[in-house]
Image (cartoon, rainbow, N blue to C red; front, side):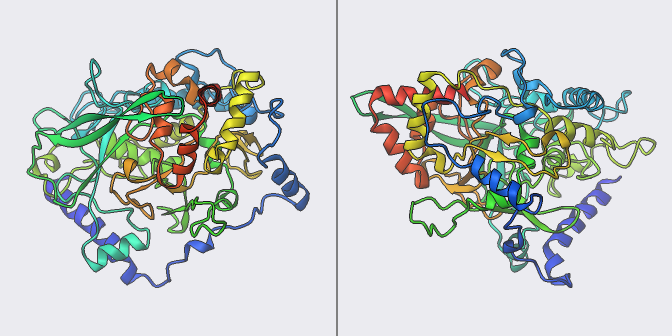
Length: 515
């Protein structure tokens, strides 16, 4: 495809997205049309589920099945650096084979086109990584580049600007676009490029230390980051473009999260804070790219993605520059302003398909991502963990970090169906205060809102990822620092933690480390 053709196609697709509302014959359905009741259960089972998922008030012993964080899909594999890379324990033998094929493709290293290895070329031309595994090392949590680790493979900048025209505002309001990319650099800063092309720039992070004193006189130093870009190769960013730093999240339990019924997530939403508890979780709304229907967003730091498949296709295109049937963008995140990028060859091979990663590559990588198992809890019934669990509940943490759900009986993957799971998240958007704000709106999420991240597996971060950096940008070096950065709706719980006696604070951390 020629540069002119690619530029024309890019313009056409953007124009279609921005003018679709004016041309549409059907009205946009309201977010309130999302299901408010479970339809997969009869009355008896629904009552049972409500009883089982109610937060406990008994902290003298572990709850039934509490150690099985992912239900029957939980892995009991040896706890080591590979524990996040195990498959759901209840897969069939045939599904295990698909998982292993997906794993191989997840680790596949892509190369630039043209190449003699035609089934593997098409990288970039601008990109952040050559393989999914390079961003999601051992399927664990990413980290900011610093010290001896100076590559930014597991952290990147999302770029976005506010809408300016009526068409742009209408497209965002109708959930046809989550936000608007930078007109030159696109939706993501690409710090790598194929030979003959300049990378877009390099992430710059500086930190200042701020001291916080806890009850009893203990002092904790928090590091406040400031972000910028060095070596912009294609001119300045748009003056209104915001930089949103994101570390790659851990991959475990995604299929189970996808199997939670929408009604159970929406039941915890309280956008107007009608109960007056200061917590006003909001549902993210996305548009299904195939059906056009409004659906619940639940994946990504701002819950912008409605499914694992959508997130996987976007990552192929945006992170690696590889086109798939669901995101047929062979030049990745190149924009019309980057003529040299659009002039580069792609890896599309007509004899293999219309995209660089034709079916069944996307199917298999999606299946792999859906079935990375959650490890079993450690020490859930010990006195130290139970004491910390009590503090966690009484401090108000469970208001957003909802302990448990029962997945839908009619889940597409039977391994995920009707399982009692313990993710410790409500999967809603919450205002986390100015300290954690990135200033970037995504869908209905404001620049101060983030999705509550699930906590399962958080205590294994050091084991799997060899670090203990937390939050969306890895600024927190410990779980204590992560808690102390909570603001906005979580400020009351944060202040309660800071005012605890040291033994109670330590107990809460012990509980988190058991997850």
